[in-house]
Length: 267
Length: 322
Image 1 (cartoon, rainbow over the protein chains, first blue to last red):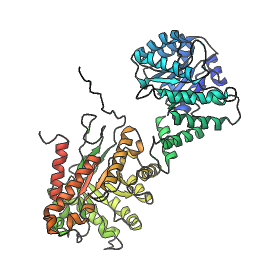
Image 2 (image 1 turned 90 degrees about the vertical axis):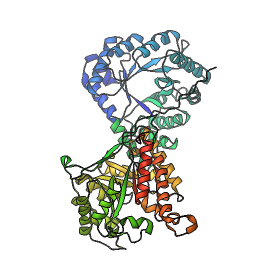
Image 3 (image 1 turned 180 degrees about the horizontal axis):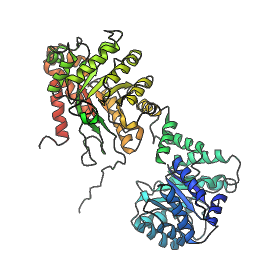
Image 4 (image 1 turned 180 degrees about the vertical axis):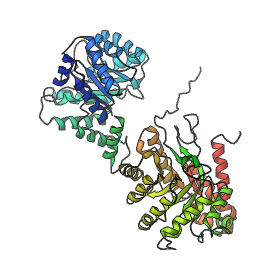
């Protein structure tokens, strides 16, 4: 699993405050903690607190000062993403994200090529979020085809079928699983498939259990990446176990120990 | 129409660990040569896929007591030196051994039951007689090995030896000794990839560096379960190359002791051919199979089998001038 740490996001109060006050400390603290937990990428998002591209640049620079971990530059605004990419020191980067909207694709795919970045493609379009499997697959395939056409290899493409809260849109969760399975058939090797994991339990009770159970099921369908809470050790243990069950890792009695050591080393 | 041949080469993200055995004077030991194994970025001899910086090596076996039970064909080249592990080791080096494996067979409480002091003396004797690096192998009785190794590991301190073996049930003493005296470690598992991984994790948990471990998945002679070991070695190597750091170790195969225990190699049956030829052939063929499975260190006995195996390695590595 490719784990993208979700915590440096202005929707969290401490990060919002840090961005407003240009206080590096909380940002760098979360960068270090998530890196130590084994995050493969650190998602960096200025959210609604600011529309200023220079705030994204500040956030990226602040994270880079603290850890060598690759960064996921996360915004719905192309100008903000550009500012984040410009601030990079050459480390691997993930653009989070484009949609299947032509205007988005036309701007973000060339940026991915220019910065040698990987790219998350979210399966929504100008009509909004899909409510069925077919449109998720259609949008995903459209993004995939456009990215491959521009020269991105499948390993640099992450498709996101849009995970929705189970409490409010229960039927969509199963549709996400089916879309994941279809994404795996787009090519060989397939693109990466990623979700914003914490969406599933929004406002729900039993958040941890719902998140873990979904993730394990989604892995069985082909999910191999997630923007998630990498500090959740029960979640990581579930991932380690799912990787054994899928025969991606060799079993040993101390497999959890081995997995945790691997994660710690990655950080 | 031009047919495009698809690219099927694999690119592996994780090289196999590199393990050096032996220490020269400059490095705090007394060896005149050292041995380095591992470092490959491809499956065995897939030179087109990656690099294989260090060819497999051949160690030859010496005991701390005469090998009375060795079959005649393999005893004969050593018959006049088996009384002295030092002379025996010298003979091995003359026959081309790149390392000497001293097996402390005499310490077995069900056999000669030699003392830890005698074992340490035998180790010193071998060390002083040859310049190649040493592998030192316990008698296989856990309790006795845990009494013997503290003295032996200390007696060869600074020489960067390869000591073994640790198992899932007995790893603490030898792991601690190898840490203290800076030796390398053989991690043994019973033809079981899950336990192979487990033993490595246990050693790591005990504070030992994964990069200082050689794994021994046990060995079988040709005709005696070799295919099981082969597939375990292959899976282990693939897991290591794919990025499983707990599986990315060089692999050791203990061949002589297995081959010279099976009837095909030793039985005096004339219609099976001359045992003087048949035994070495059985040993060399067994070695060949393990080379293809990914062996980095082969422990062998018969000089002719060693000669043939070294020639095979040179050929497979493209070092034979062709």
